[in-house]
Image 1 (cartoon, rainbow, N blue to C red):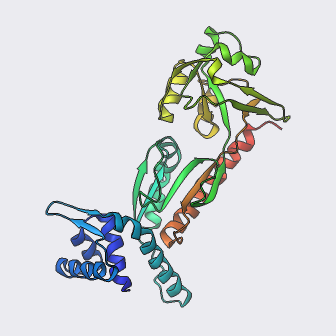
Image 2: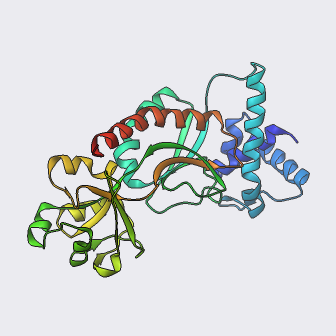
Image 3: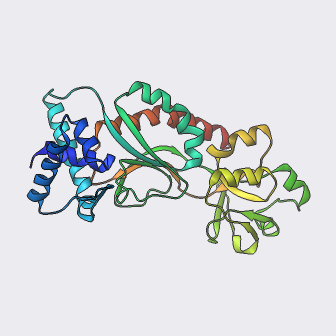
Length: 307
């Protein structure tokens, strides 16, 4: 199979424009169209749906895309082993991350990354709604959860610690909270499900809290909005320490049951489909995020977990 045609197809999938993809590879539009048609004939499948207005991936094209990327990655790795590949890292990198985390940690450091790797184009999908990596043809994603999906590989960016928070204003107007069962008399914000929550403290003492026993006042799919509402006094919410440490330090939020945190094995993971070989563009982005974010977050957790 002609890998240059495969490379053209991958670019078309990124740009959804055959002419633009062809120009990136130095091909005239007619040549690019002919090479794609030949690739489709070789595979016996239509990879792209074409109309006078737009180009889109077919179902077969979406299925073939991760394998096409792997073929190119293997070719690049083989050439690199022979010293035949250029050290320039280039290409479009599709990356998904929770919007709250991206606003606080990723967006501020992107200029440094783009200056370091001027040939990389970042295609970002930033939302607290989780995207499917394989269906969305993502190269990499940040997940704030347990690493349990068997179709994914990952590198841990940092551990996570989730705590209960409320504003001083809210706490002054409501009954004191001295033990986990006291939460049953309070307003809760943004609990996405009603499963019982395990709590643990630094001494290893465990407790449980059932959200169904309290008053649920708000559901929200955006972490930043949840935090703003909590600061404004709407109720008690669960937040990752990386999201609220500044508010805790300045006093606009207070830890509820300050010696407890959620007993969960969540972490911040950089994940990618198992079928994907790590390309140079993905590898350098992972290394960059580990260097710029991983260590500071680890230090943050160490200073907020009591000895």
